[in-house]
Length: 86
Picture 1: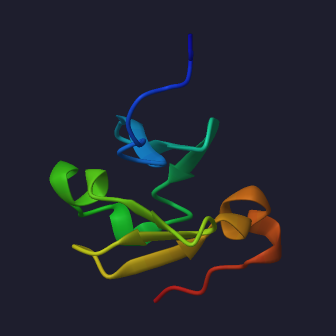
Picture 2: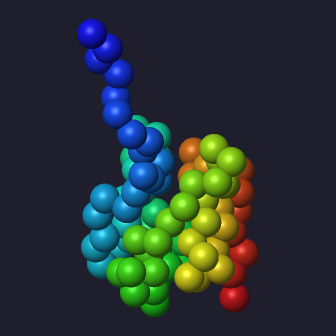
């Protein structure tokens, strides 16, 4: 008997919660909080736009509806990636 999982995972990146301060993103069993203060591109976005996230090439997150792309490194070590926004 084979106990392997059937099918292919449909999403390796998933938004798990959205609130007034930011949102939580689950990527390959690790959760990240993206506060709007640090990631201002999401502040005025709709729920559908935030939920439409794709993980590309194992380390590249893309929100095509918002034209936002982030690397996982910027979520794991945000101090190494200072944001400049005006």
